[in-house]
Image (cartoon, rainbow, N blue to C red; front, side, top):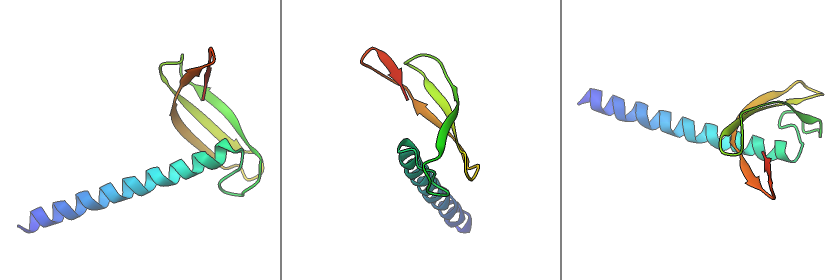
Length: 87
């Protein structure tokens, strides 16, 4: 009985932690798309690396701030529109 309660608590804690992590990453990505660094708040963020192929696969992109050296990696799905691929 105690094992079941322990497992439910652990699984609930892991799920809540994952949801909060994803929410934080989404907010960071919104700021980065506006070219604003999530750490220092300046407009000095730039794309430094992009990996992945074609319009149908996911891309791994790395952003870095020139001012505070904040760096973050995102796995984004590509989208094709207007005859070209975009992030």
